[in-house]
Image (cartoon, rainbow, N blue to C red; front, side, top):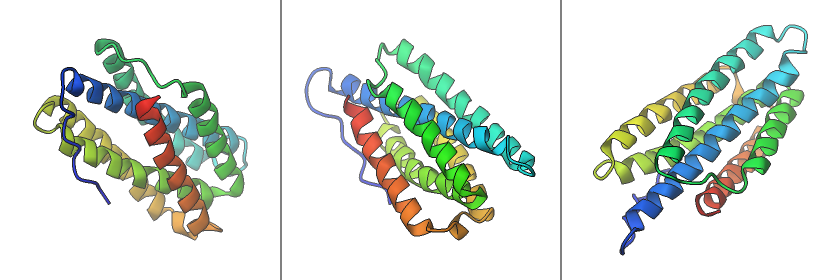
Length: 187
């Protein structure tokens, strides 16, 4: 469910302001993703028989860390400050990851599926918005979106929708992601 691309705001500096929002929110999202996987790994690496799953989450965390490093560089390059909510997203992401892992393997996958579903649409909207005025960045975001889709698809293959309370868990996580996106763009 993607929205219509956001046209650039009128006025001097509007395109730069919108780019700053995009970079800020994407940086926040990748930071939160790294923390979610860290939280899941913190639980699963200590659980007997979960070594393979913990290893898979480590691979996804490394991929998210690459995305985060790119956004770190883009923030510096464009002189954009990160969201003021960075400390909160760091803690909330870790807690979400650890909490869903404590609920079990299927819940951990449900978390990934819910987050990545929202992020896929978010990146798709940005790619459409930036395609003409920032084609190189749009191409990078499209690659990141593809990575997120792969994470989501893997979570679905591993039974994300079989998690106890899946509907509620997915709805709450998705709503939290959408709220964090709106907040991080502006603050």
